[in-house]
Length: 346
Image (cartoon, rainbow, N blue to C red; front, top):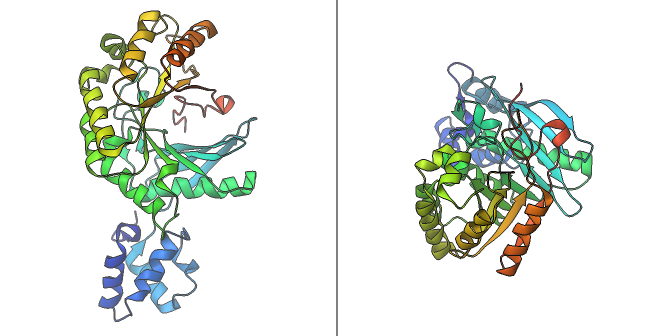
């Protein structure tokens, strides 16, 4: 941030209207500037062509626009694109464009680093440096939308909060960014096309339900046995499966929206029949579906992908209990853009 200047995107539309009134301008100028900032995503006051030069100069004197910059862009052989996004203070996060035949998805980050300590995730090895602001999250989506048009000739269709960070540990800013993304004066995207993925913070899942959010919820589960989950995700000692289950029951009672469980199967860790039985039991508490995710190694081999026979065993048992299950193959592995690989090597 430039010393003495406030980021103009921290102002609401009403505050912008009040600012213009205070300098003797018509309040509707605030509406115009708001549209430039959000719907049109400009990074410079100079680009606000329907605002007089004098007013633009006043804005330049008093405010700044702390926009992101795509520092480097990497393309995978499967069409996936990874952005290294530099923030106004020099810190870097990563976001990913994931194209398939039917959709183009933006995977965005919510923190620089992460608040949690999942052992299988590269991002968790970084300390949490700070939360992202709403505009920094929004800008990631805008950048990927433009890349989708440029490289795949179609607009962005979906957003997942599955990048760096735990979204529910940056609750206020994440929800503000989603408000902007879904607003007609923002990107106008349906909340049904947005999925927030959490490692499971029960108190904040209940708050989501109380706040009446319309987007989808996914939970990185990986084990329905408390001791095993703690081995994989040590923070789970504080956020137990009992508490998680109760929060998800509360979520469904309030929202009637089913949960997606994200679940990686590792050799010798959670690939036994006892693990499968525990997952089937856990899935009975709340209407849900299960995404079995291909594991993407990040290091020395402490975690290894389970054999196909064990994955198939999971599928058969879930199918037998009429629990929807899909296997999600990873995209962008050759550029470290796959699930769990975002490590901010910049």
